[in-house]
Length: 398
Ligand SMILES: O=P(O)(O)OC[C@H]1O[C@H](O[C@H]2O[C@H](CO)[C@@H](O)[C@H](O)[C@H]2O)[C@H](O)[C@@H](O)[C@@H]1O
Image 1: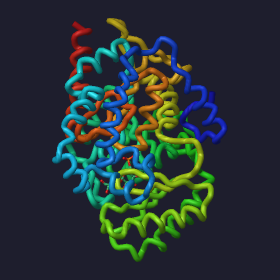
Image 2 (image 1 turned 90 degrees about the horizontal axis):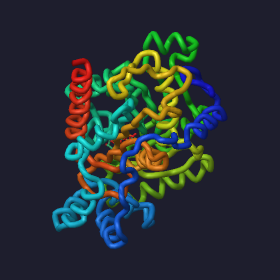
Image 3 (image 1 turned 180 degrees about the vertical axis):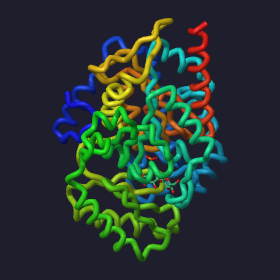
Image 4 (image 1 turned 60 degrees about the horizontal axis):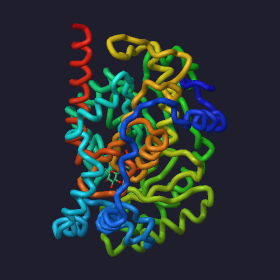
């Protein structure tokens, strides 16, 4: 199989993805997926969701869906205050706090190498009105840096890779920008040695043929939405975001119609929704879930010669012939807050391997097993994981 550190053509990447798609026999056996809720609870959750940000596509109607697209929206907050406590408790029972159930999470990693996947907006940085000001705190940066010292770590974001790197500023991580369509390895001597100079560590760009089209649609969207106050178009290299967080609700219908009209001019692009944002991206079958599988494979190759891992009291070195994707001794942990992260949670569920953690204060339909409320809890979880790993290593040395 084509290995990381080189730009691989789309077919090879697809083959790689297909190959890594099968669950490793005998991998983890974490209670995953979590038990499904009964129909009544499920219906209640969906009702709660209507006021929140999930499943908007299911109910049709763009404006309703836009309204539902962020729990920070005033109406959602009011609905919450009016009482969805019961649904919330039922939801929490099915997606318990990863902090509250920390011992279960680490028990699942016994004898396995944890591989960490982190979304950016809403996970490492709080959601703010201005996408250019979504800075991550210095303490969060230190937590991510510590995690990366202990476990192979990747940031998986809808943002353009360069931009998310500007926010995170940690060269030792893997980055998957544009919803996983732009993957790059860490700038290390090890990676550089494996990568031809012109590749500069880029691993995989399955949508590179779409670059000119994305430029075009970006321009068209900027032009077409310029008369709608508050609308902001963001070029994420292999996809484009149209933000409506700062658009008056009265103009949402007009904005949705404008975006749809422009996207219809590009049959090879599709439209989806995130948190108060429209996402325009190529129709190729590549998403954060596929990126997770690709990275599992690539990270294994990269870390194989640099990271020891413990099985019982014995230290092993990961074999360099295969990536983590083929390895039974790996526990992927994916933390994310958005609809696009669901593709990654679904992959973990399908593989029966790993821990999916949704960042949300409110009930949402999700394939994740656990939840954390907000970035502050994500940081606490990361720091606990580091501390737990340090202590287990120390105990083993004694
Ligand atoms: O995959 P992610 O890293 O979560 O990126 C998804 C989108 O995140 C950003 O938008 C979101 O965060 C903004 C800043 O907090 C907020 O203003 C916006 O409403 C959110 O949707 C980013 O700007 C988008 O390009 C990403 O696609």
